[in-house]
Image 1 (cartoon, rainbow, N blue to C red):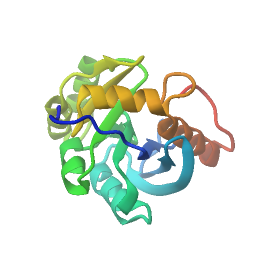
Image 2: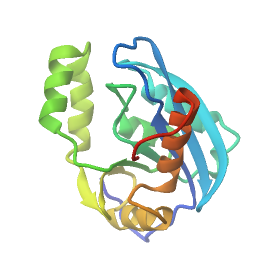
Image 3: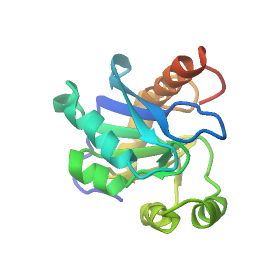
Image 4: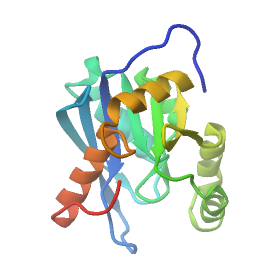
Length: 193
């Protein structure tokens, strides 16, 4: 979803990713948010969401909205549209309640049909969750990654990706959230973000 008017720049960003969890895990999964001022890490947020649950939007609003960084935040980044398996974020609601643009980033194009099948056949409330994914539309390729966006233009999204990605293809707020999430859960970070 685009905006009109003068192009904005976003220097204070919070990026969220979930912590790794075993395949058979049920219950809560930790999530990590990293707060950046340009390319400098300013703080870390943490919370929990239910595996395949429905509380991700509410928890992200709580973490970002009630943190000591809230007054300075200008943008929310998400590593994908779902946390903890299929706990799908209502991105338009997140945008509306926080009053901040939201940029969803993925390294690869999602397999939408596989996601749809999994949600509709295996996940309680899957039809409602799939409707959230559909409402966001297809991910668009941009600056070497795939994005969905609410509250910012494609030009603003591209400029934000360029400004926050000094190495590789993933913006620093998401890259660092991923590293911290892996490190605190398994004892060390691993894999590509």
